[in-house]
Image 1: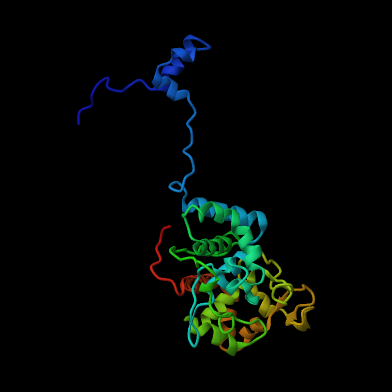
Image 2: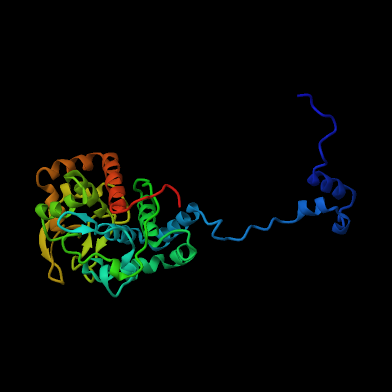
Length: 318
């Protein structure tokens, strides 16, 4: 195409520069409307439901995790919300944020102590901003919060799909934690009884147990007491390396719960953790201790499955 000559409009900034060279204090009342727009600061668009994005939610969650060092309890919140699913002798259950109703149902389960008040409380300002406006459900927010926390603490970037539906009341809880959530004072047979009906393999059990690389037990919640690793806010493969490298002695907590403790560092392992040193689990523990990327890969696959069990029609976008 041939170029048209002299068809470029005067740029408003150049016009203003010319006026400023003629008069050190140009009077804006003499500016044309185009020139006035060029020097008027842009007004940012108001934040509305239409302008709220996934990036905004993730930014707020990232700030929360960094400010409050609360990544581990957000992971536990998502795990216990989704982990009630089963397809064995017990059926049903799904991630539906039923723990919001703290006085009954899943909100009253002993295994969930600390979650309805502490974890849900930490997320409340973000939930008020995004859930109440209809941008995201509580259940999706809990899943996303856990995944953001894992990445912020150094773990893998985990994809989150959306479309989980929130429970309308505690009546939509499962009947009990028994047979659905694992007990820390039991061994291999119990782990398989809990995880296999959720569709997990032995390898998945070891990978998911690796989430204990962050966080700690609180005696007033679980009865157990102590951190599993020496860096409980760093998501890596330390759970496996420390399990293999340390010797643990029997201990009973102030709440009467049996656990294992490493004397020099004060870190702990539960009976269910050290059960992973039995065959065939131990070979997988040894693999993850040597290869963090293998652990991250397998953990991501099993974790996504956990977060999506019992859900239908999930989508890639909000």
